Image (cartoon, rainbow, N blue to C red; front, side):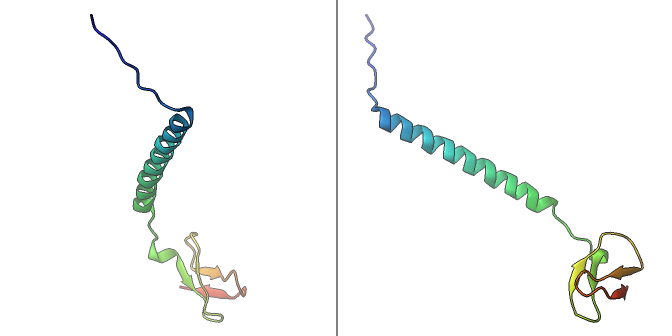
Amino acid sequence: MCSLTMINVDFSLAIALYIFIFLNAVLIAWLFSKKQKDKDLTLDPRFIWFCSICTYTYINTKEEVISICPRCGNYNKK
């Protein structure tokens, strides 16, 4: 006849193991999602504008010839 023995685990140890496994799963999921986001992020140089008055560098995604600086309000041309 087969005798089954049970492993005795204290309640606080079971909670600690559960939290440890859960936090590791969240950490691994976060690392994989962060790597995916880094790959998708690109910036086209044609959207980078430089203000000739206040020397502020800003991003304007509208494809226009003239852009307004968000800092000083100066009109800038590519």
